[in-house]
Image (cartoon, rainbow, N blue to C red; front, side, top):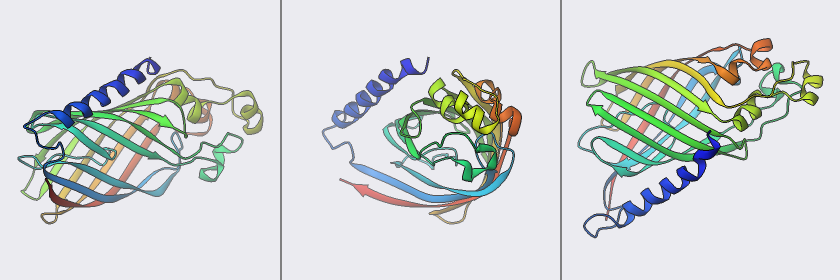
Length: 269
């Protein structure tokens, strides 16, 4: 299913970028007011996907786009992205994600399993604001080097301002993936089964997880933003059925942490 989406994703991104480059009143597509938000998040999360022991970790937070009439909602789940088409009600663009390597140094439960190389995922995103207190976002990404699968993340967040500086947000999440992705992270072939003691497992594609997340975000100044967040994820389908999860891991995944980011405003002509 997800393999068939790859050519449509590539063609869609090409069409979107071409349309933006030549649409408008003759100005360059980059003309106007822009923002660049950079920061980092520190959190406690499972050592690896499907693991039952947590460790302290960190990840970068990067986003760039055009300035709108008001501040955009953003989530730590958003991967670094660039909007090619943008209005008050929706944004469409390109997105990328760095994928770290995974091997037995990340947990003794992984001994005997093949190493997953570091790599990236690249693709597109679309988000919509059906109301001024709700955002829906979808990312579809193709694996590069780390795995050759396709991953799709979907999230809906409702948000409200408790005070002008403090915002609360929460909503459901879901992740789907192709069989190539699951094979890299959850598959156990005959050689790995013999080396690790895990039962052999050949996964297909499907829904990887469902969950719920929430955050409290404090706008410390015009440019500085900090937040505390919590995400609960329950592995499903090919991930939950993996012998790595059933015999040595946990379907329930909990992440809790804090983040800080700084927003740069600039104009391009």
